[in-house]
Structures are given as C-alpha cells and as structure tokens.
Image 1 (cartoon, chains in turn orange, blue, yellow, green):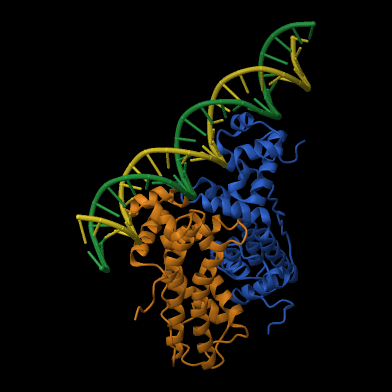
Image 2 (cartoon, chains in turn orange, cyan, brown, purple; image 1 turned 30 degrees about the vertical axis):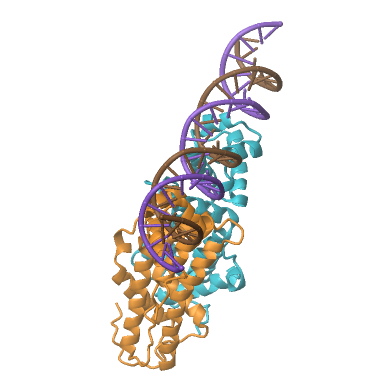
Length: 217
Length: 217
DNA sequence: GCATCTTGGTACCGTACGGTACGGTTCGAT
DNA sequence: ATCGAACCGTACCGTACGGTACCAAGATGC
C-alpha cells in the first residue's frame, strides 16, 4: 500500500508544503517567509518549526515534496519497433521540455540555484539527485533498450544522454531561468522534440536500416 | 584615450564595482550587503546610494560592469580554410565552456536567476542582452562566414547557433549552476569542444569536400 | 469532569539590512 | 587663504523577518 509515501510527511504536512510551493512559484523565494507560509496554509509558525526545523528545512522539504511526485513512466520498453523507439524518444523530449518550461520546475530550479553558493548546496544536490537524475535514468533505460535492438549506436549511455539533452534543450532552459518567457520557436515543443531526435539519430545512427520511416527534411 | 569607457562609470566607481563583484563571487548574493560593499571598497554607503540609486541599481551596475569587459575577439574571419574554420569553432567552444564554468559567470548568472521572478527581470535581460547575445553574435558571424565558403550548411543562423550551443554545453551549465563543480569529464574543455564541433559538422556538413581534414569515424 | 497532546493564532524578541543624516577630511578652483 | 564639492566613516532609524513563547481550542483517554 501507500504506493509512494509521497515523502515521509503526513497528509497535513504535504498540504502545507503544497501551499508553500504555490507561494514560491508565484512570488519567488522572497515571498516565502515563514509568516506567509503559515498564513497561506492556515497553520502556525510553531508547527512549521516543529515539522521542518528551520527555514532551510522547509525549503528542502518543498523540494523533496515536489520531487516525490515526479513520476517516471517507467518505460519498461520491452520490445519496440524502430518507429516506436523513435516515438518514445520524441515523447521523452516533449516531456522534458514541458517539465523544464513549467512554473514549478523553473521556480524550484531558481530557488536551488540561488542557494547554490552556500557550502554543500544541499538544495542543488537534492534537485540534481531526485529530479534530473530520475529523468536521465529514464532516458538511459530507453536508450539502452534501443541500442539492444540496433536502433541507435553509442558507447557510454551517459555521454549519449547528455548529447540528447543538449540537442533537446539547447540554451532554452538558461533563457527561461533568466526570465525570458518561452515564446516564439521555443513554444513549439513538439517541433523542437522532433528536430532534436532527428539530429540525435543522425549522430547515433541505427546499425540496421529498418523501415527508415523518417523522411529527411 | 580610454580604449573602452568600460561603462558610463568613473574609474573610482568601477573600482567599487569590482570589489562588489568579488564579494558576490565569493559569498553569493547574501554576502552583497550595502555595508559589506562599502567596507570592502573603502567607500561610504552614502556614495553607493548617490552613484547607483539603490541596491537594485548596484546589482545592475555590477552586471553592466562585468558585461562591459566581455571582449569578443571580433573574429573578422576574412578568409578561412576549412581547417581554420573548424579550428575557430573549436576555439569558440572552448572559450564558451571556460566562460560558463568561470566563477564570475556562475555568480552573475545565479544572481540574475535568483531575481528573475521579479517582474521585468531587468537583471536577467541585461545578462541575456549584454552577455549571451554578444557571444551568440560572435558565433553567428563565424558560422555565416563558414557558410559563405561552403564549410557548413544551415538555413537559420540562430537555429544553427542554438544547436551548436546545445552540443557544446549540454547539461553542464545547469549542473554547474546547481553547485555541482566542474569535475570529471566536464573539466576537459578541449575534448568537449572537439566532440561538439565534430557533431555539429556532422549535422551541418560542408557542401564541398575540401581537404576533409577531419577523419569521420 | 479532568489530564494530556496536538495544532492554530498572536504577540514578542533579536538581529540584520536598506536607506539616511551628519561630522570630518581631502582636494581642486579661484 | 578661502570656498565648496566630493567623499569617507560612522552613527542612526525603520522595518522585515527568522525564530520563540504563550495561550486557546479541540481531540483522546480515563
């Protein structure tokens, strides 16, 4: 039961964390004062401190709370045709762009980045381990499945994933983080995703030419 | 002569801004209090406010000050051989990685990102316009010169540049911003640069096979 | 009814920081 | 020599925020 305990937080605490997340998404870190959280969540500051220790603990809890609900479709990827494999890649790319462009992702990344100068950078590491690492794992599983079928070629899955990431995201994430809204060509996630996969498969071509369903442009 | 007026700041003011930059590089935004700046720069808070208006003005001045000293090698790129063109691309890639991994770049990007939630996000726009835009312009000039000679193929220079950026930087900048130090394979800027250019030229191959100095694998 | 626990609400404290005022000093202009 | 501007150093003020203490209300057990 408890398919995923969300985190080690009680329902009430998760409720409070959701409120806090709303605050930080809307107003940035500056808006995330303990008093504001208490008011927004209808709880007392004393409870906040009892549950999360201090403000940093609250921040960490917010990140953990959100990271816990990053559900990876698990992919399974038992047996795929070449076209299915390609479609999975495109879907992954679209998902990645959607997530990175989302309000919560941007807000949490900004939060973690702004705290990254502090020694240890626990928030950044949390985000890397529970966010990016999960996503990259999903992609690597998919890539290795494709390689097993000869749909794609590479030596190091991590290296291949990083190239894939670069082709999908390019400089968009950086621009979004700096406040430039996803407009213009950015917004066409589907088109960006297809282009990226096209390029990726050009760099890591299949060993067997099967189907060649994709028309070059 | 004042080879470049740095900005519209007096030498003394630039000196103060340099001190402030040191502060923010070392200790993050939290360390950048007006009192600390005044102490580090041996100037009075009153002067800070007279010169820069308020704290936000100071932040903007710091960004402008640093952006002003981003010197682009201008490239000129009059007539290049294929090998020279390729070498220029590799150099650009190495420069880009070096800059992005540098302390000041990371500190200023963190600063601008942490303020990006504020409406208008003036710091982020400043960084985009005076930092990234300058760099991308340099790259686009180079790319168009290469296209003129048939060393590379693309339709839209901006699109091509973004792909180039993605292949060079991949997810490294994001990881660095989150506090993960440039270690392991990341640190090999030269190797990363060569790989990226190799991949880029594979995606945007020359129209004329001249020299073919690079062994494709 | 009574004790105990948890939680919400409010008041409070200490501090840190943005911003201002003022005295003293240097330095160039006249 | 004198004036005035710019500037440094410091003291000061108001506020906002992190963190704590205290009290009231409901729940639970006996």
